[in-house]
Image 1 (spheres, rainbow, N blue to C red):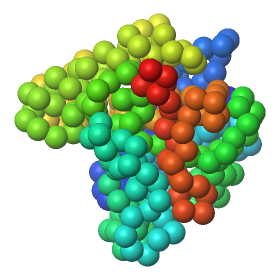
Image 2: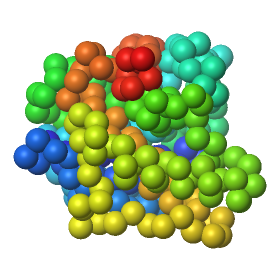
Image 3: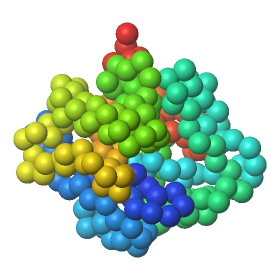
Image 4: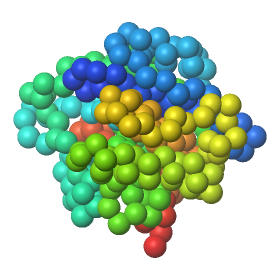
Length: 247
């Protein structure tokens, strides 16, 4: 079973891409990329999860947007449950300038056999997709008091926060269940760069690792250790419970 994490470019720009695979009761990192155009992203999906191979794709983007105005149900719930961690998500509706692009991407995945899976029987093979949101997942998985603010601030501030995220991925994910040991992978994580363009590229890639891990955690545990904000009709986000929710 493979797990694809996509930190999707909502409006323009590159998407971070990560492929994990369940091997011998551990997660292995198979690929870590960044692609610009949507056809390139879909070609990457086709390469690592060709039909009918089982795979679960987790996308950091609102791929289901039924509401014409206002906020989706999962957006409201994200603010309710994770606002105190500064992890409320950006609201989406059909009038949002990114809506056609993100919903279209979800439909492209559906056309490839990836059905939405806001409910799942753990450890069952199939072709699924879910919406992921890295910020609350990072808070829960790593037991943090607030999000890591690597997306805003000065370059120096972002570098510090992104270095923390890189460290958590390398040091903490191997200790979780399922475990992901990046340090023994044939693919090594880039070091935290000095310039802004390269920093954004690393941000996209690390977010894609978190998305792929969310996919694996959902497949492995189902509702036992995950929270689903919303449903298939109104949109949903899957959030691992992890350390934070068990305290």
